[in-house]
Length: 283
Image (cartoon, rainbow, N blue to C red):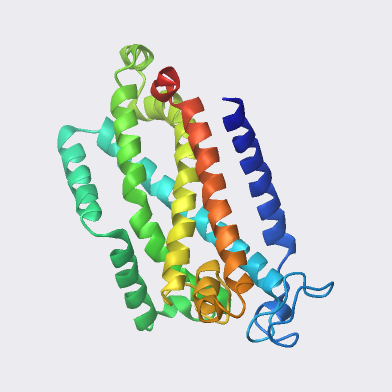
């Protein structure tokens, strides 16, 4: 138990450092432009050296952290919002509404997440939508990735919320509130949603890890964040060609991606144990 607490504490510390790294680390001139000779070794100027184009590896890792964290948070905000609406309506509403919404959610589960994300990104990038007009370059480049991951991310949250609402609406305090004449909105807003927020925030941490991993996989395949903007997945893909001559090019993005996924999962599991009474009682 003590060892697990240490791991959770280290995970929180790593995530805090990662946020600082993402905010203060990237410098545009060293992220997408050549600032030195290719494959320079680590030095006072380039802490982790340069890549095959003479770009600062440290800055690109930091910019990749910024991209991953922003996408992870944004996707989880959408997943929580849609999941709360759909799950609460299904769990608290009439039986026909529950059936309708859950069948639609099941239909979303029928599509493999990565394949559906690839399809959505292909549609968005292949269309001439006015939505992209006038946007900053980096926002227009990442919007298809965000949209694709948000669409495939909400069904899991919706099913979780629906199951929790079905359990909560049978509790005595909910029954007493309704007997006293409280309306549906009052019951949901005052007695159901507050009991969901802790567990949802815990699940969102694990969901954020999955989003970051999915974004890395898409970028590794060459269909995620487009160049010249760096992503951990694209950095791993680019470094494969230099595994023998410059293995450190592959080591750093793999290391930071792995540590981020592990840290988010450790923190998410710890929060879920705290806010889920059933898991806590089993522990």
